[in-house]
Amino acid sequence: MSSMLQDSQLTGEAEVVWLESPENFDYVRQALDKVNTRRGKPRFDRDGRIVGYTNLAAGTEADPDSGLFARRTFFLLPHDRPNDPTGPYEVGAPGEAVDPSTIRPGKVGAKTERSQGRTAEITPAGR
Image (tube, rainbow, N blue to C red):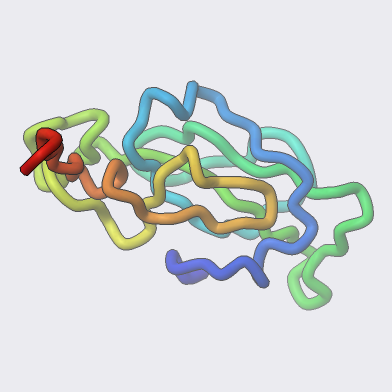
């Protein structure tokens, strides 16, 4: 599925489960994966590591064609900023990356200055 998600794709999400504290990351990548369960840690077949996932509400229906459930996973790849601070994402972030503090069930999350590796300039008062 596309890495650029929309809230309308996230119906049925009941909770976000973090395996690692989201406070430790400026950004996480998110993907919508088709899995065979509504709840619990999904299988993860990417490089890197899974740091969180969503659980679906009990009444959420599976896709009628595949019989699978669409659930988000949150993950980091080896070259992402939390793993390699001076790597390719020293500034900026991949397209599917969002600030984990903006993630809620049913809400995609957002890019922020923090997730992009930019800090706001502080201007002294009176200037």
